[in-house]
Image (cartoon, rainbow, N blue to C red; front, top):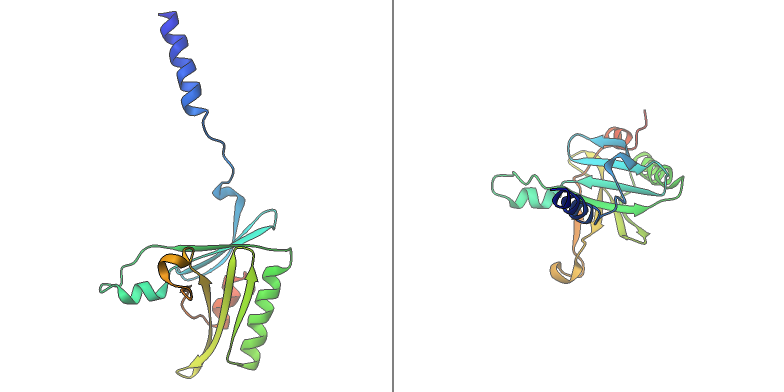
Length: 158
């Protein structure tokens, strides 16, 4: 019986000792969100940020509009990167300049699209898709457009 118990303990040590925890959701701090569609997170060590969002193009192609999947774009940051992105957005909302701006990160490109329509001005993020070979060279995933008030909430500003 003692041999069986020792054998069980050794086997469980091998089975459960096969992995190492390298990241946890506790490492991410929520900066802000726009309704339930776009979330901005930053690591506590301020080395990475991520935007979790629903792709509005897949929602519109679904006949029932029930695409519940979220996509994530994780990118490297310096301590002031999010402040710089926020300032770009704020400046464009003040000038109402229609423009598409591409920010290049080691993980891929983030495009910010500033546009006006229907009497308002909005901005949207576009990101390179993870697998360009399967989905085309110019494939991008997009967030829905948001206003300056929503940008303030997303970046945790008052």
